[in-house]
Length: 84
Image 1 (cartoon, rainbow, N blue to C red):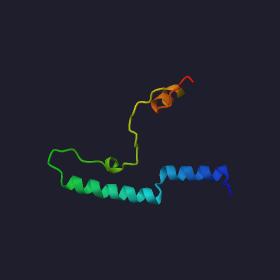
Image 2: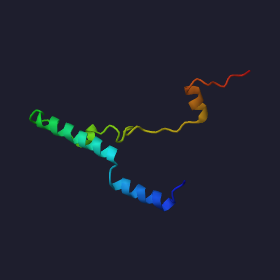
Image 3: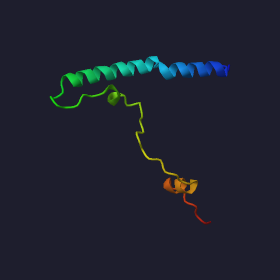
Image 4: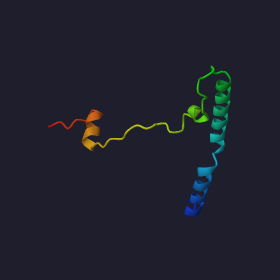
C-alpha cells in the first residue's frame, strides 16, 4: 500500500512543527539534564541550553563539505586503479 503524496506532505508538515513521541522523550531528558546542570553550575558559568544535550540534532555540525571525484573516493577506500 502506498500513501497519497498529500498525506505524506501533511505528515511532513506536522512533524516539522511537532516532535514525534520518541523525540519528545529525548527533549524531556535533555531538559532534565540542562535543569540539573544549570542548578549545580558555578557562579559566572554560562547556562547550558537544552540543544546541547540533543545529540541527534545537527550531528555533523558545520563540517565543511569539499568536492571530490569518484576516483578520490575509490583511492581513499583502497580501490586503486591498477594496471593489469
